[in-house]
Length: 259
Ligand SMILES: NC(=O)c1ccc[n+]([C@@H]2O[C@H](COP(=O)([O-])OP(=O)(O)OC[C@H]3O[C@@H](n4cnc5c(N)ncnc54)[C@H](OP(=O)(O)O)[C@@H]3O)[C@@H](O)[C@H]2O)c1
Image 1 (cartoon, helix red, strand yellow):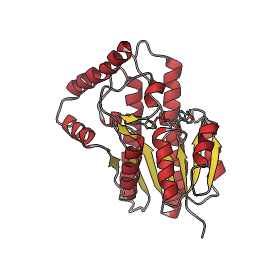
Image 2 (cartoon, rainbow, N blue to C red):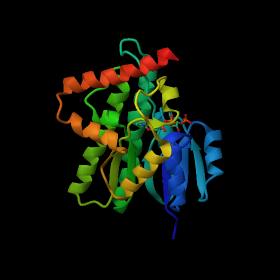
Image 3 (cartoon, rainbow, N blue to C red):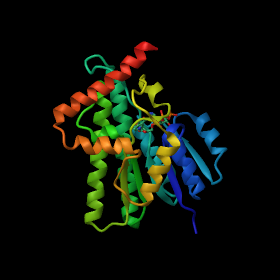
Image 4 (tube, helix red, strand yellow):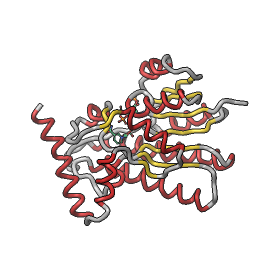
C-alpha cells in the first residue's frame, strides 16, 4: 500500500515547520514547500519519513499550480496551508505592493490549493485540509494590521463555509481553520512588530492544531486565553471590538519605538 503523504506550505519556519515534524513522527511522507530551500533541506535532514522539497513563491499563481502538479500523483492525504505573513501600520501609510503580496499568499494561494486538493479529496471521499488562519480571523477588524486581519477573516470564512458544505453532503473529507493568537515564530520579524501579549511556542500551537484536526474540529483556537477572548468578543458590539483590538495593536508599536 502507498504511504500517505502530507503537503505542508510555510514549512521552512515557525508553525509549518513544527507541523511537518509532527506529521512525520506520525508516519506521513512529506512534501515541504516555501521559498527558502536551505531551511527546507535542514528540516528534511531531521525527518524520518520520505520527504520531497518544492521551493515555490506562492504569491505567484503559477507556482501554486506547480506545487499541485508536482504532487498530484502522490497519495496526498493531508494539505496544510500554513504559508502567510502580516504587516503593521496605518492603512493610509502602509505599502500597497506588500499588501497585494500578502493577499496573494494569505488568500489567493490558500484558495487555489484548497480548491485543487479538495476536488481530489471529494472524489476519494477522504483527506484532511488544515488552513492556518489566526485569531485575527475571528475578530471584526484589526486596526493597524487591517489588511492582515482582513486576509485571515477570508480564510476563516471560506474554511467554515466549505466545512458546512462537506457536512451537508455527508462527506468524510475534513477541512478546518487553525486560529492561534500570538505564537513565537519569525512572524514578528517579517511583520515588523513585537507582541504586546504573551505568546505560545510554535510546537504547542502545532501539537494542538494537529490533534484537533484529527478530531475533526472546524475552528481550532489554541490557548485558554485566546479562547476566552474569542468567546467574549461575540457579546460585544463590532465597533467596540474594533476599538479594543486597535488599542492592543498599538501596543505593538509602542514596544517597537521603545527598542
Ligand atoms: N506567529 C503568530 O503569532 C501567528 C498567529 C496566528 C496565525 N499565524 C499564521 O501562521 C502561519 C505561519 O506563520 P508563522 O507564525 O509560523 O511565521 P513564520 O515563521 O514567518 O513562517 C511563515 C512561513 O510562510 C512562508 N511564506 C511566506 N511567504 C511565502 C511565499 N511568498 N511563498 C511561499 N512561502 C511563503 C515562509 O517561508 P519562506 O520565507 O521560506 O518562503 C515561512 O515558512 C501564517 O499564515 C500566519 O499568518 C501566525
